[in-house]
Image (cartoon, rainbow, N blue to C red; front, side, top):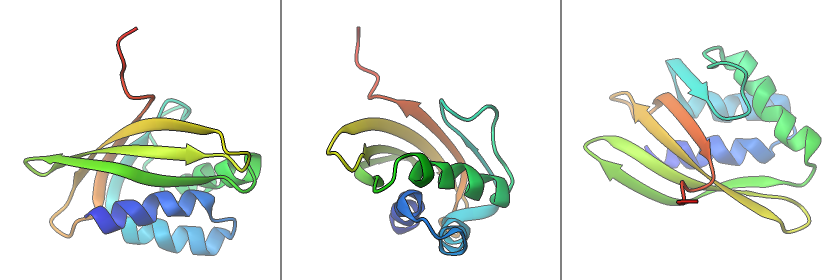
Length: 118
């Protein structure tokens, strides 16, 4: 499961749409939903998600995304992801992930930041 999630976020820096799509296919179950603070609605279509993820490298050339921490509770995962810009700036976010028996994500929900108290 963790390898699939790592591959999912590596795909965020991939500029080649076909390579990005293959990485996403390997990380996601056939039936999935993806949502984060910037998505207008949950995404459950692979081609739509490929386009959405592709906007990251399009609007932030040279940027990458990487899982920097993982925790698990009874088959549910919480990830901390670092979105790193080419200029060195970084934004952290968290994702909550459910998966199928094959370790592919069925539901991913992303949140900006780490949920720090204000």
